[in-house]
Length: 208
Image (cartoon, rainbow, N blue to C red; front, side, top):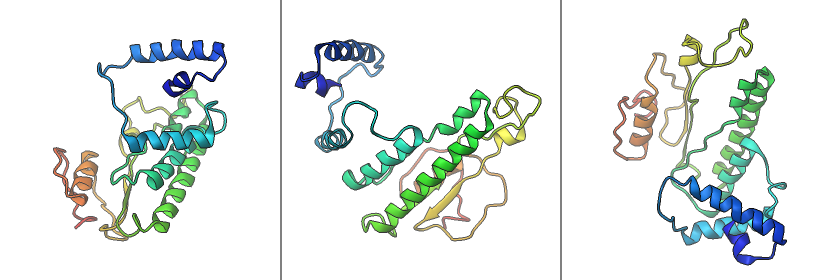
């Protein structure tokens, strides 16, 4: 948006709307200080903009967009640690179960693309770990108007899975006992040789 305003090529009405929107966005910025964009990151967004434009109508939507951004970042920025916060499953709060299952399918397709990109790129191949972990489970309460919430303190809302795949991970191993979700952070720290303050233990069963 700042770039559009700086260039000044858009119609006057669009520029006025962009100025108002930018003021509104800045009013919600809790950081209180200007954030300097690094040169590599600025180049990344310029290349993205050159490909998709400014309309917001050409690029993918929802979690497909997050996958596309991740793939671009892997090619252009070479991150050593990246978190993708997929969100489409939350559409189930509208009450339609197919929103949930469709969102999971979209995430599966995204993970397949990420795995293929890792395998095809010497920078990541053989030295990357993928960790897939939900933030919560779901209820399955057919008596409620929206059966698939996570508000009823049920076992299915509390119990989740975690999947570790890649370099340094023991293939085919299963941790059959319940562990706290904080163990995910502790295990990632151990795999990356980063000391973390997580309360959970390192899952030595899969990451010896």
